Image (cartoon, rainbow, N blue to C red):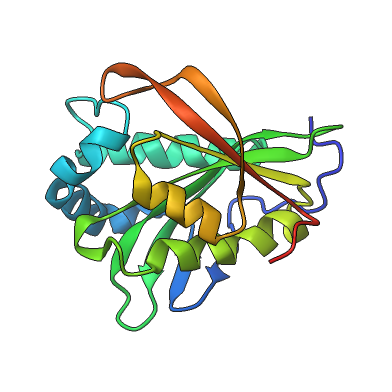
Length: 194
């Protein structure tokens, strides 16, 4: 349902600029840098992500990922971005707005990952801050949601620093690293102060 959707991006999602970062839709030529960064960061990311399929870092799996991203975007279900450092164009991570609900909800959920060499340097905070006006303006959402494992202190700090407020605790919310994990629930509303 696209009730209240204001724009149709078709096949090309506009880039979103932030403080030192650029968010843009992944393309096939991103594969080598994406696969290298994910492989280099595997141990760093594993505690916070679902189990990776055995072929996750292959070119064919990346092509399937791109097709899914394009279909999700066409159906206004999700928008995927890779994050690049503007100073040198290095890929630093990824951010996805998913689970978009239209109609009376006008809400979506964000998820993100940062490559280990770029962690704790403010890139993800800048990316989330850049995405917020895009979500509330271009996509006309009213509410952004996020969830994180209670032991993920950097993610908690990121969400609170970018204006998300803790709203609850969900038991067994997501299967992370092969285990159903409890999560803290956060949200930010369109009218919340910056």
